Image (cartoon, rainbow, N blue to C red):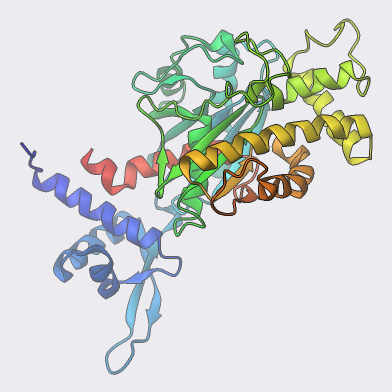
Length: 411
């Protein structure tokens, strides 16, 4: 039996409907246009817009002339300072924290080096410190902060806010991330898988949608894929969609911890490319690391920078390593596009900038060649419009979405 909704819930729902419509219009909308865009009555739009103005969530931004006789129509736009959200991205290499206003503009941001040990308690302390710093530096009233969104490597238990055996940071297994950060900051917290947050950021920043069906390839310490299908961010049954690491693309490739060879995640992650560089003599292993198998995340990051720089300078062996990762990525994306009918792939994440030029030059050519004859349409490749902080931005966008989305209001 359908459940009814009481009047306060309906009122809150109507507020989010208007906010969502205004957000999706770059130039803002008049009250008359909002009636057409939302299906609400003129009186309801008038009443709701009055409440939103009083709450400081929207503003009157000039007027627009009408066709024919009549007074110009007052335009309503979001008030950027009406609400804020914090986004924290926990990557094994770097902790990123951003503060977004209601228009999803980054007001402040900061980075912290992740603990080399991967210690969960130390990581939480650094994240809480970053949050405190941003709030103090911005001067934003805490009462206007809707909460904190945390993007973390999966898998996660989204219901309890607990980390579930993340393979790249085993020390975080069982970490009550949501509750601990809430306790440390005094702000409500939600968590999401990092690849999901990245896809959310792209969708939120481009509400009109360059594509309603695309994959976001998150390239950090590891690799994952966030999906937008039929204009919706796809999260899966447990909100852990996007674990692409064990799709086999290179049967003769590196041995994966799962026991098989050629898994996509292992074939392209920076740590594995660095190890290949050491074996091929492109890179020198740090003293005491032998063949490089014991490298910590900081050493991997430095060596990955050296590997990509060597390839850019024309080192053939270094270029061959990156090109093999491009070939494996092309194979994976060709199959993914054939399965889900996506027409766009967006790349981003902390490690992306170092391979961006080579990937953007060579990956589209491999996809266009489509040696297997799988693709039914062209697939475009682009870098994230949001930048390196995409996962943190997406986590903050999730907070704004939860606070102001029509669907969240009635969930």
